[in-house]
Image (tube, rainbow, N blue to C red; front, side, top):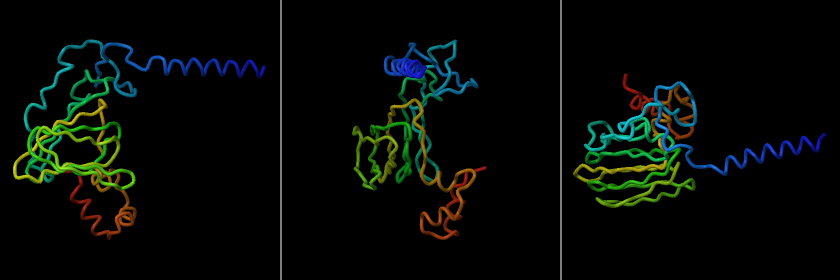
Length: 216
């Protein structure tokens, strides 16, 4: 009886294993995201009636407004803007920077990023898990890569606006801004955690929280 049970287990495991490794690619030509569906999957459910517009987006054609405290704006072209990207594993963003503008330290937990400079000059860098900084100044027509999940940034130290096109190997790479994640979370991260982590007082923590709090 034990032998039969073991054999059944191995057979079941083998079928599952083969199904996982034998067909890793798409099972259909397209799976346009049904953004209104309540079905929860690793991605989005497919909708039935699709058009060419599901694969189109013109939002990266013009510079974004950078008149904010950071002097930068990210315009995403991901599955939430282009439903046809669902299951395809790619997306883009356009990032515009005012003179002195900063795309602050952040991570993309689901994607590696590669940026192509459209205009201007940027100081860019990423930090490894060993706390080693890799940084460089990049100019129009040049490319830089930020490995998946690592903290990185871009800063326009020039006197003219700058812009990049960023590509990701994910339909929805996700973004965690380090400062906002820690100081503007809901509910808030306890002050005693932040004071100990950053070796500062409660007043400094509260001051940062007040500046980063979402605008109502």
